[in-house]
Length: 534
Image 1 (spheres, rainbow, N blue to C red):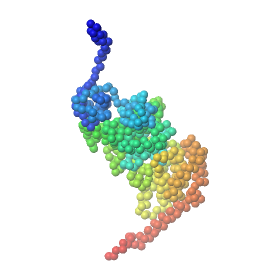
Image 2: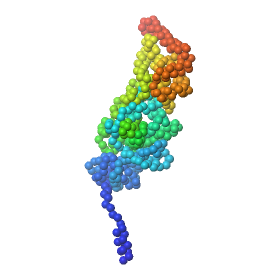
Image 3: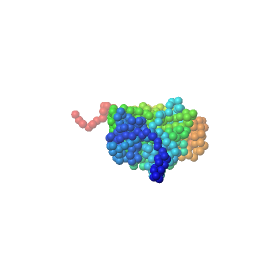
Image 4: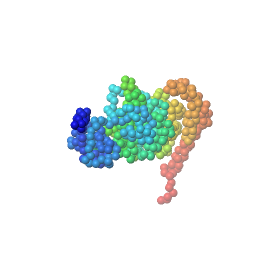
């Protein structure tokens, strides 16, 4: 009787609850994608749980099956294995404790610095903030590069595409921008998609050497990772940036690069047997990137006033900006910085083409003093390029044209900048003011970099002028007088009392060269003798 009483007592104490579970079975699996039947109540982007602690994301909702992309080692799963819904959508850990870490697309650490105790999670996919919640972009986000900050300014909350062929310095521009945010209260997220692990390690090492990891999060989905992780990486990085935007802070997210992201999504879509369109991309390839980049915004003061700036990178083939993915991204973003191979191989770095590059925010994202010195810079460069092409034919050039050519050569030299050496805004303005006001005209082109260094050293010692520029953010009468006094008294020998002599001698040489060419041409009856006889 004691045994029966014990059994009855245990039955009375037992608690039963009816919890519905939507259970299904794998009917097909391969290459990180599973087709599952039986999940009648699953929703799009819901997490599906498999055996061995493996999870997946439901993407394809078909009439008799569900297409699920697998996180983790899908080779442990086989046909017939059970799975069940979780009722949760994909969420990414966010917060301050992620700063300085290297993470995968799911927010798991890859740097061996221990686990991350996340207090808050954000959905990977989120609807972009509406127009009513935003305000116009009017605060500059300085890259530290003279060529970009002067001609193609980027504002906080903007989406600026960086586009160009392979190995032309696209990543270098983004690294300079991240390094330049040190001490400016901008949290940076660098998302590496489909890059070599060695390259990602180099990027992290570069950021650590310049003490930029103190304000940076690196999200890595390398080429050796699955297409699923490469597909999720930019959305994870965007969610991390949105957290800081919601806190009223400024964040910058770099997507390096979205070409490989499109490749990963194409691979997933083909494995899910979705209908393919142009270049085998699925029909929603535009929506893939538009829903990501539209999340970059500058919120109004009622909603915290934070911002999320996006710098997507696209790799072109032979400079073709009219290809499918490049045109998609160009139509989504607020401008593009185009890097050209000819300039790069000619030693002009960053190899920015000021003709094709554009910022649709424009001067709204520039300080007043930068507008003052950079107002005609793009036009001057465009005129120089046109004249330089014309001058190649050896035509007789007037004095005004020669002066423009000489000024243009010096502007090109001034806009060159070594990698990983961003420049503060006051230094940029002083150098550009000097070249626009003719202080470089008599300096030999080969010595422009040395003279620029001399000017920067003078500015570093002139604390009164530097403080005035940083405080007023404009070149007023006082700043102009100080600049003229500083540059006139401390100019190079060729730019001082003998100002203009070097330029005059160059013009004289060019004129005499053109004159001798005309004499030679007339003496040969309009053509040079070839030494052959009839």
